[in-house]
Structure formats: C-alpha cells, structure tokens
Image 1 (spheres, rainbow, N blue to C red):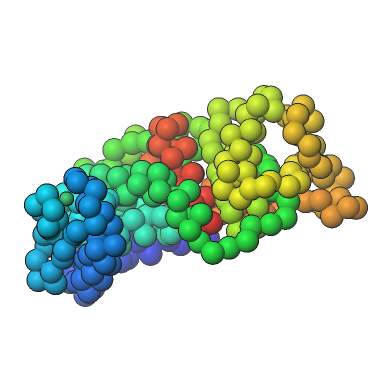
Image 2: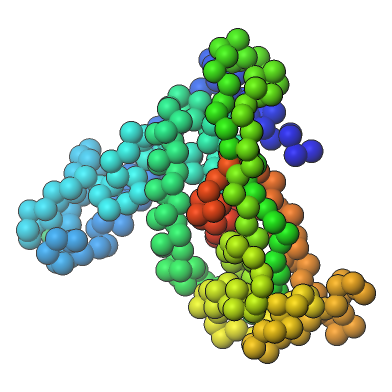
Length: 301
Ligand SMILES: [Zn+2]
C-alpha cells in the first residue's frame, strides 16, 4: 500500500521522460497573474501607502501613480523571483503538500532541477505558514465542539542518503540502485496534534514528558478557533499533569468513554501524516516539524 504512490511517481517520471506526458502550466500562469493583479488594484502601494496602483493586462509591471513605484506583479508574493513560472510554483507546492510524491519525483514533472523546486517549495511553505492565521480568519466558518489532543509515537522522515549515481538504474525500476543508498534514519520526533472540527494543528516535540509540551498546540488551536471549549485526551501521564481542564478517555479499556469522549480524529490524522512524512529523505528536526505543521494546515483547508 505505502509504495503505491512512489511507484506511480516513477512511472509518471518515465512517461514524462518519454515525452508521452507534458506539463503545461500556461493557463495556470495566466490565472495567477489575473488574480494577483486584481489583488494589487484593491491594495495600497507598499511604498507610499496610497491606493493608486494601476495594472495592465499585457504588462507584467504594476504601477503606483503617486510614487511611481513599478515592481512586477509577483512582488512580495511567494511567486517572486523564482526560476519557475507562477503556475509551476503552485503545481509543485500542491503536489508536495497533497500527494505522497517526493520533491525528487516532482522536479522531473516540471523538467527542473531538484534544488530549484526544493527552494521554491520551501519558500511557499514558509509563506503559507505565515499567512495561515489570516487566511483562516477570513474563511466564513464556525469552529465548534471539543478539541481532541493526542501525541504520536516517534516519527521520522525516512532515510537520509545520496541517490544512486549509477546511470544504468535511471529510467529502470530503481530497486537495484536504491539498495546502494547509504541509508541513515532521519531525525526523530514525537508529533502532537490538536483537532477541532475541521481545524488541524500539528507540532513536533522532542518528547512528551510534562504537560507544558502540550500547551503550544492547544494554544494555537485556541487562537485559531476561540473560545476553546472542552479538551479531550487519552489518559497518558502527561495529560494527567495538565493544568487545563480536560476530559479523558482511558485507552486501555475503551476507545470511546461512556460519556462519548474520544480522540479518534487525532489518531486518524496521525495515520495520514506518517506515510506523508516518510516520502522525505531524512529531514532534520526543524524540517520535519515544518513539514508536519504544513500537513495540518493543508488538511484544515
Ligand atoms: Zn506608491
């Protein structure tokens, strides 16, 4: 099961290398350009603060009539100054965030170097994380009900190592090449998740030793969906020490308490995030935490 997507990625790469499939992001590029220009027309100038920005359909520059500021329409967005078109940036990030394809498999789709795609994806990811609270607050929604909090077992992002240099393995089923990788486990973390309605918050922790470790995700969930109501957990030691009012389900006995307390959403989330994290090759703790946080954001949206 877990190898289904990477196999698909390999097959897709071969189809692209053979020229059977061609990725064309032209209409996507045009759509992003139109949306960004609409956005600029409703914005005040980043230079002088006046609302006097003009755009043209046929020009990639926008213009402030007041201070003569004339940047390209991607200025200040994650699409700015990339070696990729806006559509390629969006497609790369979408494939990264919402499929089990690795960046190694996404780069050939776009006919671009690994490093170029990696840099673009990481920068969009940082922008998505910065912008998420604002986007979330603009969505017309009611987040209600209890917040389920749970921690995963140790997770890691698969193996660090260099891909095979042997050119014979390229294009073929790379099993022989793959076995030549020097494999080391990536850094390991425990994940903590808070689930409330459609909201998903995931953070990495080095270990769950005391209740203070749980506070960051609960606080983040509270900031995004206040006021926070009941917090549901299992009966892990850390939760027993938790100062916050909460209700528990005793897991050794049952998955749903007689009062209907459960943490099924959080457990379900971990079952999705773990195969997704395995597609990365040996992320550092920081990279792993960032990726897990992104996964929560994408699931929430
Ligand atoms: Zn201006």
